[in-house]
Length: 529
Image 1 (cartoon, rainbow, N blue to C red):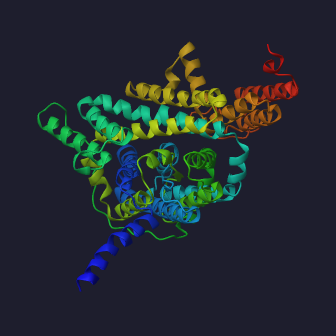
Image 2 (image 1 turned 90 degrees about the vertical axis):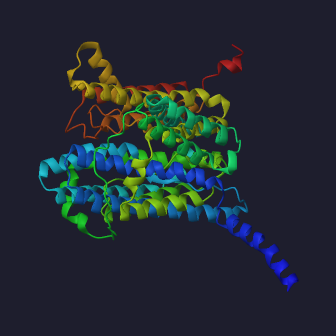
Image 3 (image 1 turned 180 degrees about the vertical axis):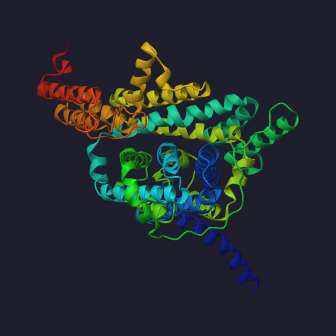
């Protein structure tokens, strides 16, 4: 008997360890879970806040229809990505694989709520019909992404690494890390303590007392500090714009979207550029994951995201999903597949049961912001490590359109706070605002084109670089990039002619022709000059 017990006890750790390795469950999943979960949940809270608080949308539709349907795509996508990671680990014999994260796309969330869902409700005066129109848009976007997913791997291998990682790096540093840093400075006593804990434990890899995960320790400490300082009267209590309540809604795919299909066609020019940006972003993040050691097929990543978006629309969702760009950061945390499994189920069940709002309202934004700062820093560092040093200039030029987006967001916020808009500007200020608008519209695709073209120029692949520039000319003619319209919509040049778009198209084509003319010219390095 003692012998049997001894054998049993000795086998238990081995079996347990084998189980964890097989399903990629690691301690780092806890830190990563908080990052991915809070990111997604915040998107849902923003969506409901905008629709209910600004447009007066009925809460019953937002909480019982839109949110439950939207989280179905997140649940499906994160589960599939978890399975893909486990299969990749089995195929390669490695146990350090990290799953690709998936969640709700932030840029299109704002575009769709302010440009489609809200305006459709105000125009139609029918909340149910406006919801069905938005469903139809998401279904069409899902089909669009599925159709283009099969070209993902070819695009990934044809576009230079700097072209793929440049936009990701620019977004990581200029948007993902910058905006949370502003939140930290709103309440520095809370934010900096949380940031210090996260940087020391995750970046410095120093264990927190009692082996508490660094992300949890940072968020918990920041939250406790916030509530103590609020109770002492140092910070005003946070006021939330809408009520959160429990809702039991279990969505199933249906043809409800068909009732809004005819009306949805009018909004496609606004929606399709954002779908295209997610496709390009999906290819970018696949390359980013490959650079950190996890080589996923781009086609399957894009196909999964397309199906997740389609499922979301069929179930009543009104926002699209996207593969998140935080893979290198989550890998740096030591995550496997547990964090995507956990986040998928937590968000999916939370959307159907209604507890997401309560949890987010308990956690101050300032305490969560440092997680995003870390993610931005980690992605930036990983991208430069994975890119050849000769292409650093190409990486740098990718920042310009993203920085224009950053400045435009802040300018619009400042103008809106003063009760103004870009239309109120005059003279040089109006010209600068217009330039920011044109440079920022389609910024992910613009960054990819510029970084790819410059990489090819550096490598003297002028013909290939010319193709990128000429593609930019075609895209600018139809508003896929550099759209002159405030909502960034695409257009037909013979229906809505824009002199600026025609000028930009000509500029791109002339630049491409110049590269072709320079093909075969001798490099200064070759002549010794």
